[in-house]
Amino acid sequence: MVGQEVSEDPAPAKSSSEEHAKKPASVDVHQTFKSGADAALELLKETGGLHQVIDPEIHRRLVRRIDWHIMPLIYFLQYIDKTAISYASVTGITESIGLEGNQFNWVASIFFFGQLAFEFPTIRLIQLFPLAKYTSINVTLWGATLACLAACKNYAGLLACRFFLGVLEAAVVPAWVLFTSQWYTKEEQAFRVGIWFSMCGVAQMFGGFFAYGVAIHVGRDPNAALKGWQIIFLFLGLFTAVMGIAFWFVMPDSPAVAGFLDKEQKGLHLERIRHNEQGIGSQTFKWDQVKEALVDTMTWLYAFWVFAANVPNSIATSFGNILVGGMGYTGEESLLLVTPLGAWEVVALIGLTYGAMKTRQRLYFCIAGHIPAIVGAILMATTERVPALIGYYTSGGIPIGWTTILGLQSSNVAGSTKKITVACIGTIAYTVGNIISPQTFQARDAPRYLPAKISICIIYVLITLDLIVMRWVLERRNKEREQEKAALGESHRPEENHEFLDLTDLQNREFRYEV
Image (cartoon, rainbow, N blue to C red; front, side, top):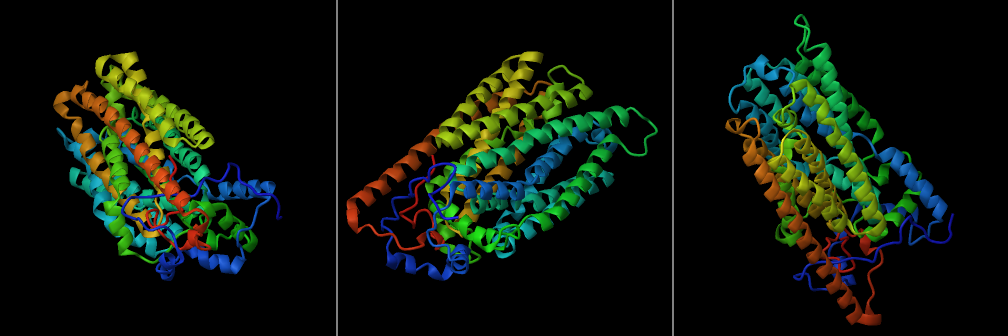
């Protein structure tokens, strides 16, 4: 059991921060924060896990066990629920409800108003209640709400259901950032987030084929009891609700209460994630960490990327089928033709995040994923039919940026309250971008939507530059901390178990950032 150290990749150098946190780690500084220490510190007392070394084979078995229990389908469900409105747009919802002008745009946008309205309460609720249970309740209720869309008879009903759907999905991204940091080392996080997010591509393929089947077998039947769009909402909504209920029983709230790990395995897991310098979470809400999140440069670099990248998001969600139809294809054909976008997303996400994991160069691989997306955006704006369709597909490389940002928030933001705050600011940026997104596709610009396509080209260049700035800031912080450590020489003595005191990345001068 005890043997030579351990992990699938070498442990990273310990970590770093911003200029205003000048004081190096010391016993006095850390004592200040012990009252709100991470839950891992208490678990360490129970398991006796103090700087154990882990046999490599035992470590591999432990990681496999965690993977099998902690890789559920939440992102698949979240994504396919949002794109359901796109499938409904070509299976009769506009005609059935009598939508006119830009009303469909507002049906698409109001979902994100719901997310925005509930993001601040989510900051506290997600920390106050057991994480997996809170997420499970949200998933179950959003499935029920999605199913209720099938009963809508008018524009107002659609707006109400879509708004509450957004409210219930507000917790998902912040929850996922916390799950990732609880269960995986910094080296593992990029690839695991890539796998989770690749489910968006799987959802794109499944949803397209499913909607096509509904359109062919139900949409062409004038005597069908339900319209095609109603079947889509009912099936996906009920499926999501069932998965939400299952999530309650399958997903543990944290490693401290994971039923699939015994006490010894919990202790070994804490040793695995010790060098993350983050622990597994604290339920103590700390206003100083909220303030730090608001003044941290990186918070706003993350937020800008998320906001800007989601302004064009309608090309893959609400307006995907309409956009492909505008290239010269029928509505039914568009249901099938959007599916290769999902396949490209799966390949790009898994391939690039695997490369990022092996080289520990996340931002370089992210930038590489942006290049074909920029070329694709130019093709969409300047060509027709097949070349434009190829451009539509290669634009699917942009989600690598979203996985990178989520992964960096998980790896590079320490302090339980700060991590939730940064994740929620990111989600607010995401919702604002998505509120704007459908409005860039104005009815008067149909069927080519050229102004929207030109804006996409510009935005993709800007978010690529943002990634370059991020890398420069993070490397500078790491360099400063290494210089501090070198200046202290042999007098450098980090406090025992400082990793589990719920310090932020700026407070903890042992912290090093992933780039």
